[in-house]
Image (cartoon, rainbow, N blue to C red; front, top):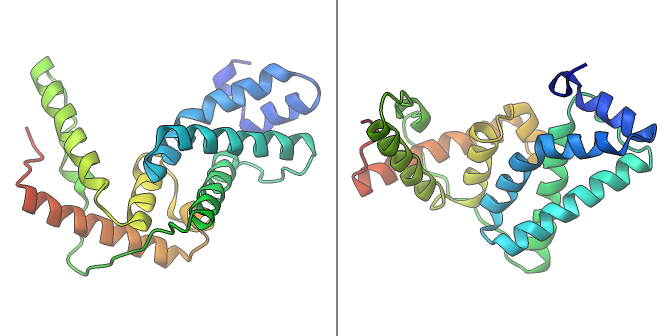
Length: 196
């Protein structure tokens, strides 16, 4: 069986049977998404490194103890652990982020980005657009930024986002809606053109 065809559940089972390489494969499969999520929220590489390490220590200890039971949802479970460790960090440092909601029309910024890359010039322009959008995302309130990242970068469902962030699906959807509304306003304010 090819490595990419092995499910997370099978890798966990193999690890518990003594195949330590399976755990490494499992971590390698998900580490980029988890680390990128943590870094995007905390905005500090050293802190992100620490929280990432703490996340996977907790993951490994839970699996070793036989307490893992999130069948078929390993990434969501890991993201929930990372999310909880981030919240714990902010609580301990008294830096709990706040949300700022504005109401307006529906708008999905990601629908406007042309991802067709026909030449090096097109790719450079597209890369610059993505950098500009990432900078704008950083200006959003923490809850909006978090949901937007989980949805578009970690490719999580709204149901999973709601579970990880411990809110209702409607709240997760609302945060995404406000994030996209606020991004549209920022794009207008900064006069950014999203097509090439």
